[in-house]
Length: 188
Image (cartoon, rainbow, N blue to C red; front, side):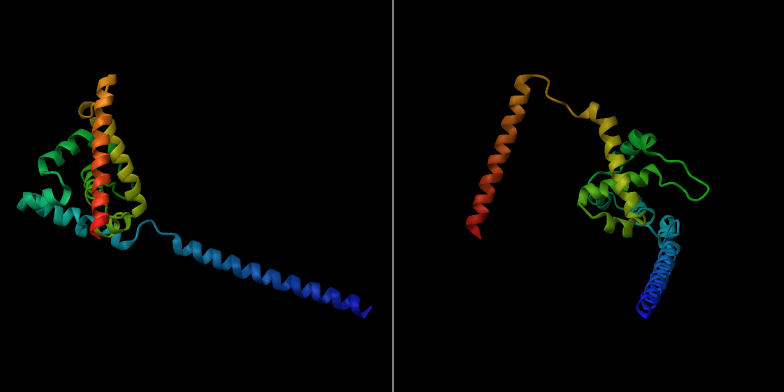
């Protein structure tokens, strides 16, 4: 009988330990959830006063067109053309909780990403927009640019001869790349 009683005590003790572990784990999860509950980080909230777009880019636009063009790889006139052409398609509404990111800033982030290949994390710190938001901004803006301006400015080959011409250009470009790689391999 002592062994049955000991076994019951051991099971009860194990059950208490499990309950205690589950309670601790539950408290950790609640603490983690509490730590994650924030709308926007404070430093990101200062985007309109300290972000690259609202400081440096505005300065370059007014004072140094060459540097502006180097920064975005397009001049101010082409930038404004993009905003005028695509802005309505990428504009978001303000909410009671926050102001939306304006179309000109969305295009600026997208152009900077495309021009430099900068990571979303790096763009997050300079533009003060979360990288999650930047990833959707870049995709939406590229889709809008392609959808709106693509039919007007991008020609798709329509005949067999045009397709063969494109294939020939790609073949030449591929040959050049191969020769360049071979030459670089011999040099190193």
